[in-house]
Image (cartoon, rainbow, N blue to C red):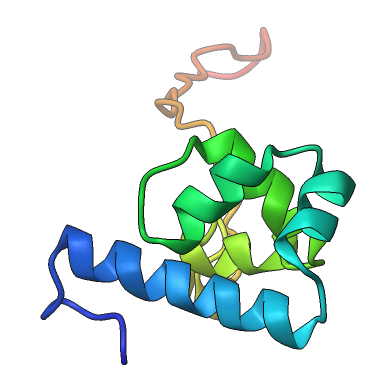
Length: 112
């Protein structure tokens, strides 16, 4: 199933839980082994794989254990790195000043 705007919160949660479980099984790790390696309780892992809520820090621990932490970059991209920003290149900010017009009224003594 594709995660997009057609799913509600519960549907997205179920799909993420299912994908995580499928990945863990393919890794291959049992829930007990994952709990031991990640320092997350077995009951938390079971709840998560059943589509229930867990804390964000526990999710990060589980993702790190399976080597998936770089995928958080795709989840919420860094807004300071945009394709349009890279294409245009950064423009340095310049200080704006008012130009002063100098009146040169000075003359040599023999000039009139």
